[in-house]
Image (cartoon, rainbow, N blue to C red; front, top):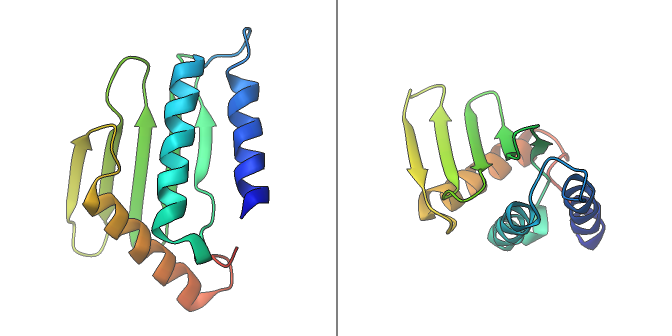
Length: 123
């Protein structure tokens, strides 16, 4: 687990260097959220897709065939959470710097689905 956290922390440090696109405060918020997500399913955590945009955003994305969850970190704004169940068409959007309970539930379900079919979620 520490290796994944170290690799991700290094990514956030790189993109938040003085010539990088992400403000250090935004990178720190993203890292804190990453740590909160790890706490939800520590024994099976796998990293989300992560990207930094030229306009200073950091985006996390988890996907399965049926579920999609993303968190978008925008400077000086609350974290934007978006969830979509492609089967039921259920979706929601929430803006908060805390890990929403329903995002934690979605993370658990994504990990359950991914580890039921592969060993990909084992970390």
